[in-house]
Length: 264
Image (cartoon, rainbow, N blue to C red):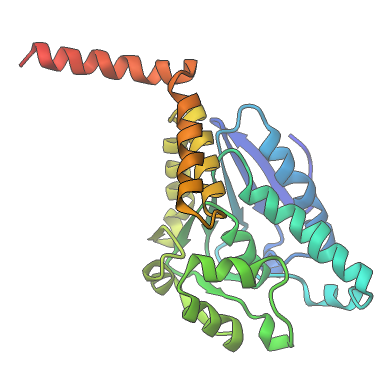
C-alpha cells in the first residue's frame, strides 16, 4: 500500500478506503492533504480488485472541516486560484464522481465547506447522529469553489440549498436525511460498520452491472431530453445482457426458479 502523511489508504475484501487523517485539525484540507488526495483517489479508482470504496475522516468530531483557512492567503493571484479550484479541487471531485464503482462517504461530526463538497461527490452518504452539514464559505466572504454551488442544489431542494449557501447555516443528520442528502443516519459508533456493510453488498453484485448502472445514472443526469437518457439506458443494457459475467448471476437464478416450479 502507498504511504501517505495525511491520509490512510487501505484495501480490504475488494473494498477500498481512504481516511482523511488530520484529526487534531478536524481533517481540514491543507496543501499536503490536497496533493495526497489528488493522487490517492485516482489511484484507488484504478485498483483492479476494488469494487466499492469508502471515504471517511479520522475521529468522531469531523469528516472534514473544509480547507485550512491560511490556504486562501496563497491564492491571491488568479493563476494560483485557478490551479486550486480546477487542478486540485476539480481533479479530486471529478475522480470521485466519475469512478466506475460507487464511493460511500462515512460521515461523523462536521461535514462542512470543502468537506461537504467531497461528500457530495460520493454516490452514497452514511451519517452519524452527531453529523452537521453546511457550506460555510459565505461567512468569510466566499462561496464553495469545488462544486458546492452546483452540486448542492442538485442534491436537495433548490430553495433549501440557497438558504444554506447564503446564510452559512448548518443542518443536522436528521434534517439531512429528510432532505435526501444522506442515505442513512446511524449511531456514531456504527457509521464505519454500516458503510462497510453497504460496500460489501455492492461488491457482491455483478461488477459489470454496477459499472453499467453508474454509467447510465451519471450520464443520463446530464441529458436535457428523456429520450436521449433512455437511449443511454438501452444501449448499455444491450451490451450487458450478453456479457459473460451476467451469465454467472443469471444462470443460478434460472435454475433456482426451475427448482421452485418443480416443487410446486
